[in-house]
Length: 93
Image (tube, rainbow, N blue to C red; front, top):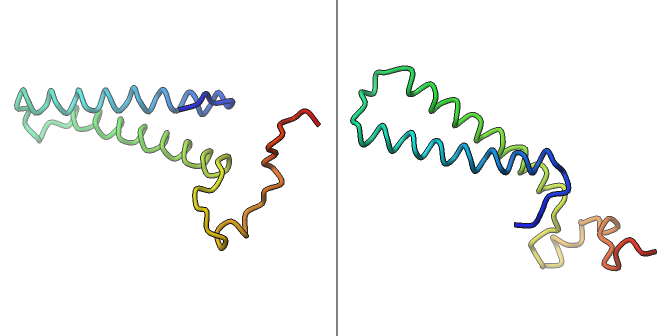
């Protein structure tokens, strides 16, 4: 993964990793300790983490759709792409 020039996207990538690890640890601890499914506090924090993960994924996806080159190489998909923003020579001109 390359470095992000947008600090907001970089923050979301860090939060996404952190929240996924926290969710995994929380679900693992619930499984190993045999927590009863009816407890609201544990499921609420799991729901909160899942919501935070979804929000970070949405922000990152919107950024990636707008900033990455298309992956397809067939003529039909490349024909409709605006390539004026992609300068192979850099900003030296």
